[in-house]
Amino acid sequence: MAWTHHRAVNCRVLKRLRVGRGAIIPDGLRRLSVHGNSPHQQPASEARAGNAQVAESSAAPPRDKRPEVFLGKAASNCIRAGAAAARGLRGVSPPRAAFVHTKSVAGAAEPTVRASHLDPLETMHVAAEEDVLQLENGAVLFSGMESTELLTTLFNLGLVSFEPMVDLSVKVLTSPLMKSRLLAAPVFWAVKKTAYSHFCAGEDADEAAVTLNRMWQVGLKGILDYSLEDAENNQACDQNCAGFLSTIHHTRSLPQGSVSSFSSSRVVSAARIVPSPSDATLVSFACVKISAICPISLLERVSDLLRWQHKSADFRLPWKADGLPILSAESPTYQTRKEPEALGLEEERDLLRGQERLSQLCEACAARNLPILVDAEYSSIQPAIDYMTYAAAFAFNRPGTPPIVYNTLQAYLKDAPSRLALALAESSRRNASLALKIVRGAYITREKALAASVQAPSPIHNRIQDTHSCYNSCASIMLDRIASNEPAALMLATHNADSGRFAAKKVIELGLDKKDPRVQFAQLKGMSDSLSLALARGGFNVSKYLPFGPVAHVIPYLLRRAEENRGLLGNTKADRRRVRVEILRRLASAAGLKESSPDNSRST
Image 1 (cartoon, rainbow, N blue to C red):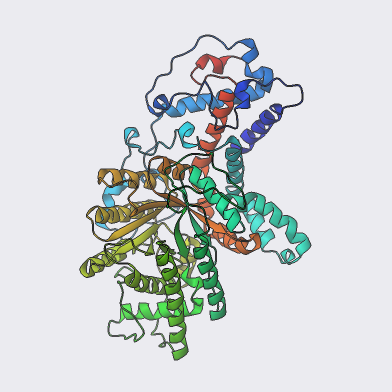
Image 2: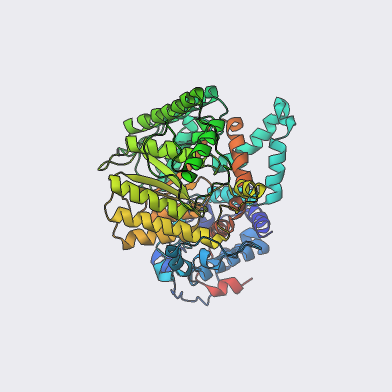
């Protein structure tokens, strides 16, 4: 309701700002869309000071400058409320870490597995003076974004956070009626103008290049995500692999740039983007899902065999290559209740073909010095994914050189800490490079349903606090390893502001360079943009995941993410608040209101 109300007021305000109807528009209003700068903007030094006192002004604004003359009384009151909110935010300390105070899932019991190194993080407190990200300083945070971009962001975040709208969209897009081109065309048009444009980079390389260049202007890089998964046969796997290879090859034609620049004066067009003289590419990583290049049924078979070998040490797998440990004593094995049949000759050949496809992608990335992120998936196939990924990492990651292959660790799994410990110990013993992306996880509904179907405990942490603590603990361990100059690299993929703040502070405390390529941050495009911008402006390496491709091609991917990430999509309240406050601050500045004047907020 708050979002709808403010959007309605803002629309009325913008209608009053239209030129050509005899309205007199002051200079401040004309600057509304130019990054929100105005003569009345508070200096950055004051805005950053948590206890800064702003001098009161007792004089009311001159009559011809009063906002109600141009905007109407209701709109001007809304603007004053925004200015007051902006003033209030500057004097309020950031909240404690969310994983200390977040409410438990209803009815959840205490976790049965609790590692001792998680305990200190449960009482972690980030004081105001320790907030290295300055997430509440919207004037600085969004200074590279135009007001129209902020309004669009606010509108789209409101849509995806409204669960009935998500339900309706899923029903419409999965309806048999979508097979009709006549009906599908307007639906695809609406999707492209809203959710697609918010979460995706574009339909082709030219559109993706424009998106990448725009992100570069605000300090971000991109991870082009060719959104495919769950292949059923070798033919589909070959086609998908060709698509991934094409995506990697496209990085050569994409613009070159530097994330250290915040200039917005570059020439942008769909056909050509003026490159930076820097040799740093705007694409930071490639990514792949193993289920797109190896048949899903084979991954299930291999995972069963790996789990059974974990249960029975003398169980032999003649096709198994050398690699890091995959399962720990805490890893669930309820998916495999009896000894599975050995792989047939054809299955072994198909497994080899899947490994060869992954090697093709790794070779293409190595030729371009482009690391590749191998995404985690659901637990029924994750052992096979870990096996293939670690085998590729052994082949392509060399100590003393930047790693090419990154595996993914899901912190919402109870066995994540123990599996990380095993991987670290074995990689140290072999002097092997361990590169990891740490995520929370995106398959909660599926994992809980599978465990419940066989009356087994869920592999997911019972409390959200434990997932947050596990994430931060694993990140801390990896950062310590990097700081000790052991061969390691870390991608912190998180939408959680407290985890981002914690990791950023840890990097500084360890004396690591913020631009150390061994430490990266990432978020999905359109999600937690304020965290991405804060990290980038803080000097860290930040990328956004960019699904791209034709709308019809990407929609199935978006639908799966919408179903699996309902909590994430709905958890946009903080971002919406920050964007809304910044929009209102800009309106206040443009209307000639001094944010520092309490009298202005009382005048009518």
